[in-house]
Length: 364
Image (cartoon, rainbow, N blue to C red; front, top):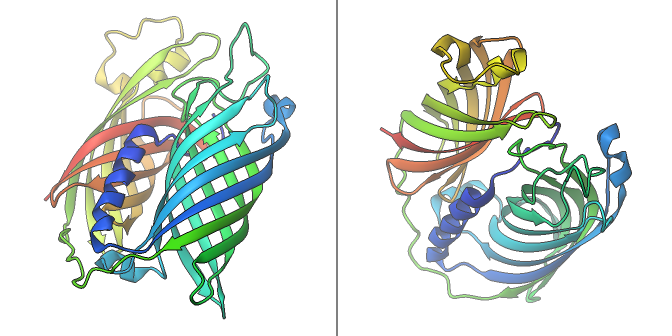
């Protein structure tokens, strides 16, 4: 439950969210590129429990990307691209960790343009299936991955050639791939794989749209949401907990791309009582025994119709001292019209994954 631990189990909803973002962006008929990427790297143990999993890794990815230029949000980035990647990764130890298969929507933009090349960064997150997981009878030496279904996150800095009239774009870079399940199943140490990056993309020209697409997401000040989460708490006494969450957010818009967030959270979480009294029944608890109240500040960044959110909060009230006084949240909101949105977010306490939530929201 550490780390980058679970920093992304954004799963099915994230794939759903980004696929709609890609669909919406396709209206401007941008340039499309088809590519192939290779990741030679190393699985690094960030805990003594996973030292035995260290091994050389390598991965292959097929990618289709679209260059964005016409939409209002795209004008706040330098040469932005949205892409979808299909990844296969050999985790280096066939008996303990096996292989990973993932679908990863992502975003890429330029940091600096050179004479015939660029320095770029790329981020992606999605859903992965890992063939080998912890099993108390058959695979107990894998203390890092407790489920076949996991979230995946990648972040890379790359140098890319971009020569006039040449449809081939070549990339080299360095970055990190991470798998974990956000405490949905235990154990959840997660695995981290720093690696090199080699990519080759072939550009397919398309006729650009003559009229820029107008932004339909009007500035708003208030958002309300409700969400549900699930987590396991103990490996020796496996118990599942249903988490209910609701909140209100006040937005301070900076521009179409960025907004500050200020809000109030309420969580219903029975793990406070379970940690202190593991043998007690979890029924009949009073609200003060399972209610967390949170106040947070944060930031959101717009990419198409998807907002990437990061929040930091503290608890004015919580039932026990079993959690830190502060919490963090990282996630996505997908706005399907001017008022409604769906969300996916991971709540953590200084890198320790608490739980993952899915929900719906409404903005005034």
